[in-house]
Image (cartoon, rainbow, N blue to C red; front, side, top):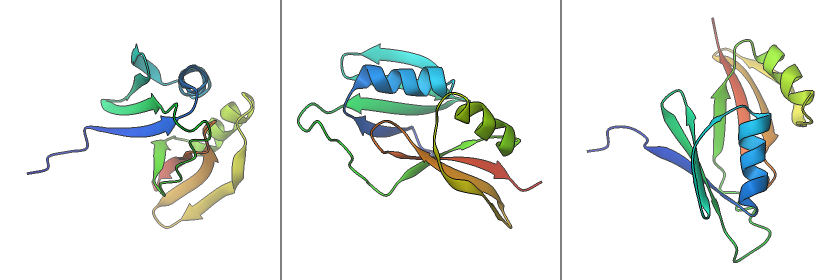
Length: 117
């Protein structure tokens, strides 16, 4: 029986560069950093990154996107833009909420999401 998602993991080409991105730019709490693996805590959910040295251009493009809840989304967009994050377009508004996409240093798809009020 599946109870919940244990963690989400992305492959990265440079672990230290990605730790700086997720910890310093996105502000996620680093839980552990061992060799080629790091984990972050997001309100009880774990996001893991692991270094793949076989291919320097990881860019798996799995089709998955990790969305971080951000309320209000416009404030978070401005804060991340001030740190150099480049977004893919503008905030899109849907009946279920607002969404905007961006990428980590290895082109893994990330997004911000603000639920509908």
